[in-house]
Length: 563
Image 1 (cartoon, rainbow, N blue to C red):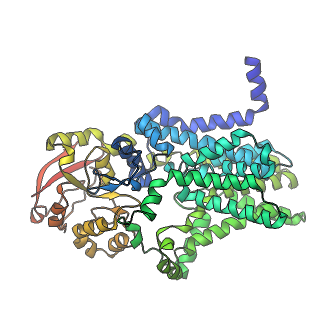
Image 2 (cartoon, helix red, strand yellow):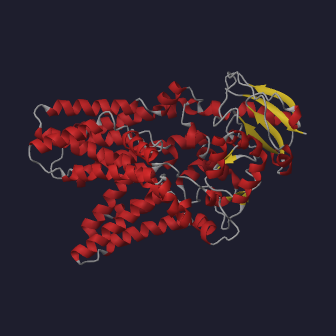
Image 3 (cartoon, helix red, strand yellow):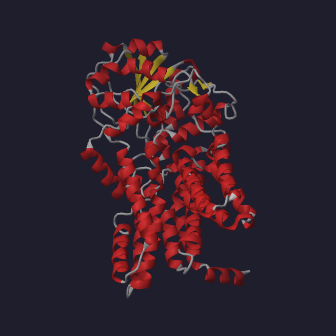
């Protein structure tokens, strides 16, 4: 047994070492559990609670677009993830933090092995250099992915490898490739990335048909089959968008994209150099210089690095397209076609990370082969890049920033005390939150009038706006933010701006809150959870019941009753 393990380790030592590095990266989730610092934005303030709400709702397999009463007096079921989303079932089977850790583990190992086989079998297939393919794949696996994306970005290299294999081998493609192909949709988002990926595969198939005068039936079957699985997975969303006439999403009122040419160019440069918050590839310090050096070396040796240039300029184009989507000139198209206004076509930029790490591998390959003394140099660069990424694991990054841990953020003991004080069934009253994310109350079982959801009824957006209208009039920034987007239906306060995490260490006070409490009462609002004291609460008809805090938890909550 030990000799077999030794032989395997000797043969695949770089892969084993890379897997150990990934395990070390993941260790905080399993050692610290709920005491792990993780991302708040588009994570603890939203997706984690969406999964939890759905897992506890009893409406996972709803055939019609019913509503969940916990949020906004009835959040449409189609606003939450599909019943065929694998993450939903992780939250059904496990506690939220355990489900989150499993998702992180799956995401990173699929990213590693997917990129590794793509580089070995398709990109650098003629001459394999293990340190480059393993190093590039490890870097890709350690990226600070948007957690709820699961395989939406991390799984792209694996999906591309499978499609290219089917295209090449046809009937000789191993059956397990087909199985994995049809499993990927359950772990990824069609809307986020795979609608673009499958469109590109379709274009690829069409070019082959025109060029070779042959229909590659199995390649087409793979594209159509995967698309079909995604459509089945998102049956409720499709039903709500195209067949349920009485549901109009608040996204219909989106009015994003008013940048002038100067602002558009700045956005292009920012995305090209730094990436987007959901697809950061940390490529500016090491990968970009390697690409530049590789192109210089190729020019010196009269090489034609077509692959490298093709992938590099693809990312240039993707960043440009992303920026142009927010250019004021695009409003003509968005205002003319509803789908262009409600669907974000700029999201194709989520291909960026995979492309940067393909460029990383090709650039290092050119240096390795054509630059003297490059081998130790390349190894050092791989180590530096992976070290940079390792330091960005969530525990390191967010503990340094100072955001709360999972346990601190949701503060279950604190909100249990509030629930006990109110002493009524949580379904019998509704609450709103000021100075903290409403998902905290939602996580703890409270029924909220405020929320953060990517789609909810436009009629509710208008109703809720009446509560916060006086505050919106005090701040042009908040008014524009709510009216042109509105996915965050929050209790905005002009004095606070777009800040929703005030801990008990804050010395801020809300001096002059201006809300329409009559409308708040009409919608069923009975209590206000405020992270800060409200000086003029009596003028608004708010009665201060008590304030709550628990040692070791970051929040201090002032509980106000709507008179």
